Length: 319
Image (cartoon, rainbow, N blue to C red):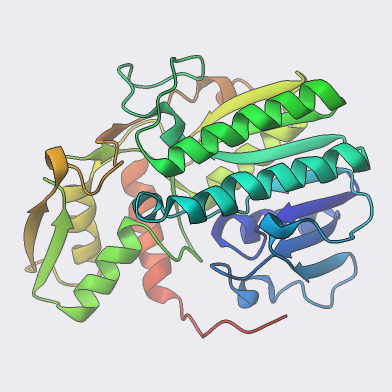
């Protein structure tokens, strides 16, 4: 792979993928509409040989970028909670955008497409840890439904048009440059009110958390090591942590151990409509390629909290 297209490359996970590919010596073209990604996430690479940025909305089509060898497709609306409030937006940014990208892939003759899917495709799995061959897949969020639709189309295009597809079902990914999620929300709430932290749901929601560095390593190893026409890999930590424990970690890292934790409740104890209460993935398949998470969920949450607290977030600018 000499020339790689990264969609959503100015976003949280995408910008880390871009960095790893650039460090490998690849030419990288980034497509991002900067609706949630930030230009400064790519500031290390602007002006460097082999790097190109194009601002574009994939739901409106793929601009003329010529041919590439591989695609890492990370462009999406990542907000699971908001997907039930605006399903049309999620269809447009997650499903229509993927279809347009697949049409580009079909015409340009790429060799491999890597896709950032989600554990949300499993819905409320009855098998924990959940393996890749679990079924039937019945998402409970609109977001999860869009990711499953994407997986189906990617599989069909790969089989029909001869490129290799590598699908990664990601657990909760945390770390530097993240602009949403439970850690981000808890930090914002405690900065607003240091004496109290509201936790959505009943606090027992228990999920797997993985640091973004481990996530990117898994994606690169999966693309390098997979050989089937369509390969699917779970990517997550080997354990899980409750949202109540995350709240305690965030408060501790902010020096606010005495902050009162208030449980807000929610539908069936969930944080929001479409929130799966228990998520832990069986990651033995990707581990079979030589990947291993470097931290457990608690370590990933603690490290991500420290990174978020250390970061400054200047207002995004155009590239």
